[in-house]
Structure formats: structure tokens, C-alpha cells
Length: 243
Image 1 (tube, rainbow, N blue to C red):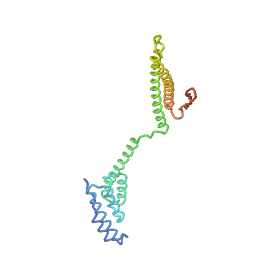
Image 2: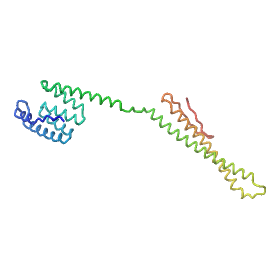
Image 3: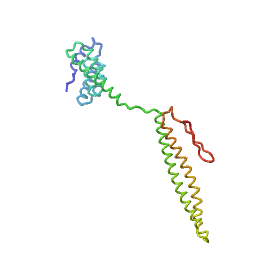
Image 4: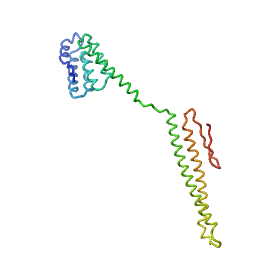
């Protein structure tokens, strides 16, 4: 692990030359305190906290070497754009540094990492579904639910009609001379089940037709999707549309 450049000596020298640098003694003392606090946080692995302290020290002292500390702290924290910005500023502030070529290679490598990260984010980013696709999916789901309920109702109606037919046959085939009380229950069931079964069968077939129509019509695009109209009439349900 490369050691950070601890700058307490530089800050002490700046404090001595404060009037020439237009910096107050209090500013430089506070910069020293911020730097020391940042060093403790860095040693504890709190890279973001250390960077915040170094930023305050930099704002107060404008000591160029603090920019290098900021680069290291931001890189450790995973803030690569900020790390590149601070390293670039350090290179510009120290053009005669003997390490300039090494620092420029680090900056180039860091910028490459940033570009690769941006490219990965673009590849992974999910495509947002359009409102028409969401509406179509919801309509199709509702259509299947209606169709399923219609089929269930039609099956129930068919079963009741079968029971009604059996009761009617029992009444018709009763032996001559049978008492009314012996066939009255079958007669009453026949009428009730016949009526209810016919209603369920009709409603179920209509609901299934409507549901399947909704599913088919919602499968197209928003521009090509047909319009469906359901009209309630005294004699039943009318389904119409424009394809």
C-alpha cells in the first residue's frame, strides 16, 4: 500500500509565511487540525470522511500536496471522477515534479477505469417499458380473468341444465297413477335448474367471448390495436369493435 503524503511540515512552513501568502495564522492552524483529523480517519479506513477533512484543509491552506491526498482518499472511496479531478489538479499545480510521468500514467489509467465503468452502466441499465406495453399487458391479464370466469360459469350452467333434464325425465317417466308429492320436488328442481342453468350458460359464453376478444385485441401495438365495444341489451350482450 502506497503511503499518503502527510503534509504537517508543509503546513507549519506556510504558517510562518502567512502574511506573504495572504493567509491568516488561524486559517493555517485550522487547516493543520483538519489535516490531522483526516489522517486519523484515513488510517481507520474512513476514506470519505478523510476526503472531507482534506478538502477543508485545502480550502484553508491551498497547499498543492493536499490535492494528492485527496486523490488517494477519493480513489479508495470509489469516487473515481473526483479522484481523477484532484489528481489532474495536482499535476497542474506541480508541473516540475520528478514524478510527473508516473502521475500522468496513473491519471490515464484512472480515466480508463471511469470510461469502462460508464460503459458497464449503459449496458446494464434496463429499458423502461412504454406506457402502451404496460396497458396492453394489464388488458390481456384482465381478459384472461374474464374469459376464465366465463368458462367456469358456462360449465356450471351446463351442469345445471343436465340436472334439470334428468328431473324433467323423472317427471315425464313417472308411472301412471303416481302421486304428485312423489314427483313435485323433481318438477320444481327442473324448472329452477333449467332457468339458472340457461342464464349461467349464456352469461358464461358471453364473458368468455369478451375476455378472449380483449386478449386478442390487446396483443397488438397501440397504433394497430382494435377497439372493443360491449353493449348491454335487454335480450343479452352485444360485442362489437373495429379491427
